[in-house]
Amino acid sequence: MNRREAVRNVAFLMGGALSATTIGVFLEGCNSPTTKAKGSLFTEDQQKLITEVADIIIPTTSSPGAKAAGVGPFIAMMIKDCYPDEAQQAFVKGLEDLDKQAKDEYKKSFLELTVAQRQELLGKLRDATVAVTKVEKEKLEELDKQKTDPEKAKSQTENTGTISILPKDKPKMEPRFFSIIRDLTLLGYFTSEVGATQAYAFVEIPGRYDGCVDLKPGQKVWS
Image (tube, rainbow, N blue to C red):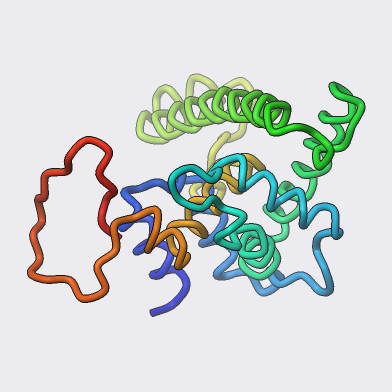
């Protein structure tokens, strides 16, 4: 099984938890000859920041959180070895912007913030990402409609003398820092030993397959 098939299978098994944007940039990296960055892509503080952000996304509750599952190093490895240059640059800039926002609002680096302050910053980043992604998605859907409606596309481009969208210029979603780190946190956690055996209900030797099992309130899903 190659990396492309593995990602699609994991996304399916996780119930589509990975966003289309993250799957898209990840699969793009499968075909990129310049994906693997030389040397270290992240500073020591950025490595720590990745780990702390992941632990805010999946904190310790009745089961261990992302930090205990080793998700931070997993995310750093995935970005460095599996993502295309454009996504790597967007991710590094996202780390820098997050730390800058922490200093602007709290006069401290992100690593020095309390859990509540980190949650507040990430909440704002999540809301901003959702908003801009929604607008971007609507624009792409409109472009797709224009491609299937030649008259509409012609009316919007006849004054410019050019065709705005060519088949080879298929628009795509821009890589977003929060989307990527959220999705890789989910991927890393629920495919880790901790996630599979403690966050999920784990049966080492399962019995017969049953495609529809009712769950009681609070019961863990099966890994």
